[in-house]
Length: 507
Image (cartoon, rainbow, N blue to C red):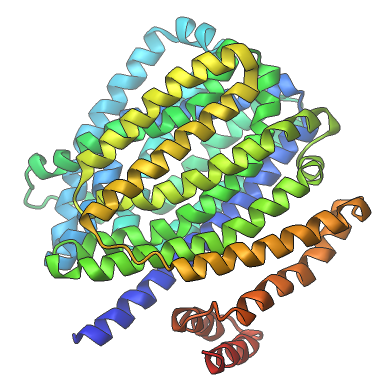
């Protein structure tokens, strides 16, 4: 395949990966909001705190028990598929499942033996903690199978199975709360949803007897990934546990609403970065592709900030509207955390682009070291600041940690890859966003409900896109993305193609 054709193929694959991951995020985020909205409008802040602590405890322990193997599969499968095809992938999956299963069994036995002590320490009711133990098993295997699909770049199946999981989670939770199960409703609904979705991800080909591979390369990537995952979960999941231990479940419940809403900022950067990761991993087998890697990473940063900056300003200006949409007036005190958490989420999203690609280019130990230092900074600062300033202190700790992770990640990635940062385009995004900010501040006194805000957002979005057009922001890659959507989406596709041709004519 010629270089030009290969570049187009990689571009199309990046778009395809990103589109399905974006759809996956869109469905998960929307229905997760519905999930938490059901909790916020049906349960007390204390009960919401119990659910938040339980779910994040499940995810934290699941990340530990998988030994970093899921991350290693995401890195190694694209390489093996590039070299040997699927026949090189299946033995790796079977090899990786054995230590994962042993780790899960040992972890669950320890949790069962000391369940009374653990449940008291994290302030979760005993029977709720037992449900958490069962959930850890299901979610760990579900994530393992998801990592295999991710390495194969089968983002479509990830999207479909995640959709089934989140739809069932909302349905089961809503029904159980309606039947009077209180906070046990979501705690039972979550593992049931994962059980059904897990069956849809299962593929018997992964476990057919084939020639085994060595564990050496698997754990070369798995060991640093395990430490990185634990460090990352301490920051993004452990904060709920820290807050519950040092304060109350009610404070945790109020903070959960603010963090859940603002976390969408970081996820928007994570999506294109996740779509890029297997492509960078596959390119890493050829040392001549560093320039291409730097260009693609810069492109992902450009698209991330294109979405993140205006959305961040919108959430800052209309934080009360977002909270009332999401929950009840009792949660309005969480508005004080929005500015800090939004800035932290921006730093997190950009930092992930750099740290994840350090792993993709074969530098897992550097990524591990960054995450360890970040988690230590977070642990120390969160314990001190939360003790004195409660959830506000925890918010500042999050911002400090994410800023550190971003700066260190950037300083290392540029040592190995010459990044194309598209500085001119980023300045145009910032300028256009500042104009939008002035408009938002002007209209805020006249916006009294979320319905009116929703109507106003459409013309504001057109103004933002128009300002970028006037400043010559758009590139040929943007035209390709529009054409991709135009060819894939029925009915409105012809209008998207018309816009693509118009933009191309202005280049």
